[in-house]
Image (cartoon, one colour):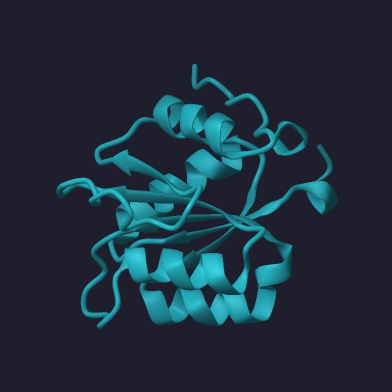
Length: 136
């Protein structure tokens, strides 16, 4: 797929290594990726580019932000309802009703295959991710 036609994703995670790894997984699945280190930065990106973003992939805990990834997911769902939401955490899973409707939770640590499987669940048929490129 041409770079001009690839959809955008937003990865929000305070851990630079996890954020970079998540971005690489999404790039392998055919996305161009915006990265944010905290909720405020993610909201700024959404305000600037939200209409072009197809997916939000956020961590739950993002210190030192006063808000967390669940709040980011809720704000995203309210302000940009077309964006699909994938929420990750190495802590306990969110309680039923904590995530916006349609959002999917994924436990850390995760593999590219797990992320890809959740993307296939989350995204409509016309917006499915590209098959992951297998590393040799």
